[in-house]
Each structure stands twice: as C-alpha cells, then as structure tokens.
Length: 138
Image 1 (cartoon, rainbow, N blue to C red):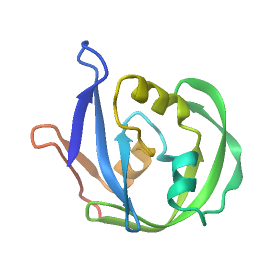
Image 2: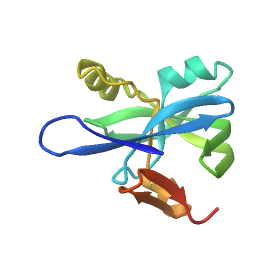
Image 3: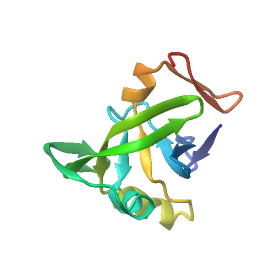
C-alpha cells in the first residue's frame, strides 16, 4: 500500500510506503527520481543500534543540498511487500532537512527514500488507482 499526499495546494504529489527492517516497520518516501535508496542515519541508529556505519568515499547530492557525507551499512533484513532483500547494502544519509519540512507541515517523519535503483532492478510498479506498489521481478 502507498499513501499519496501533497505538501502544498499545487498538486505536487508525494508517495509514502511502509517497509520492514526485520520486525521493525518504517515509513519511506517513494521517489522515482532518486537514483538510490537511502536511509536516515539518526532513525536507523535508533532502530538498529547494533548497526555499523562505514564512511563512503562517494559524496551524495540532492535532497536540498549539493553535497553530504554518506555512509554504508548492511541491513540484515529489508523487505517491501513480497520483495525480501537480505543483507542489503544500504546508503545512509542525514535526512534531517527532509524531516524538518515534514514536521513543519505536521506530517509524519520518514526513515528513508525508496529510489529507482530498487524500483528498476525488481520491476517496481506503482498503481495510482489502487494505491499499490508491487514488484514484478522477485
């Protein structure tokens, strides 16, 4: 299931979905324009305190900034509906600027952004009529 919502009155829609990190459910923005799936460092640290972060040599851009430090971490169990990605090598960023906007609008914070890397690789299909996200290449 995806939630479709707008941050303003200009019909600029955003998509949010629930995914699982093991037994923990988190909210992620679905962003087909994001080249990679990323997780928020603060929230991941709280949810999975045993997680070890490795500094990435790549500088990430986007999400309202030209450069930000990124980390890598292995998430033991990551699943979206019927798609299960064990030992998922994740990119970890500081998503405070995104969550700050959401808080100011009275919206629920997100723990990450589901990007086109997973959507493309696993044949992600977004059905706006039924508010469903599914994967054709499992």
